[in-house]
Length: 128
Image 1 (cartoon, rainbow, N blue to C red):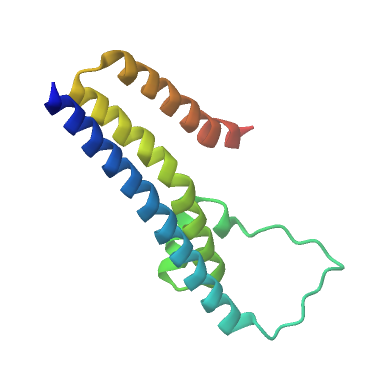
Image 2 (cartoon, rainbow, N blue to C red):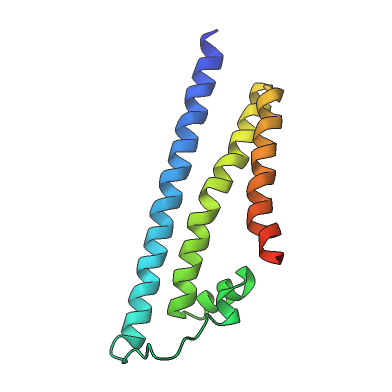
């Protein structure tokens, strides 16, 4: 009986570490992107009289990653935000894996429903 509790505790620690690492990593990436952006554009005067939406390179994951690889500040900031969004999704995925290992299939089903809702809200709502 102690073994399942040890497994539960270990999974909880892994999930907690995943969340901490995800948030810290995303904060570091956003900070690095801000430094790059300010180093290149920090002395430019902002023009607020004309609204300009974000470029298409900042609206899709492949374009964001490509721009970040080219060390573009805004793309690096967007990559950090993508990492921040991906952190709880990764937690739900790892929770489902943990429940499969524990053979707790009710919670596997509930976790997969939560994952489906998360993915729909990110992917499905973008099409509207």
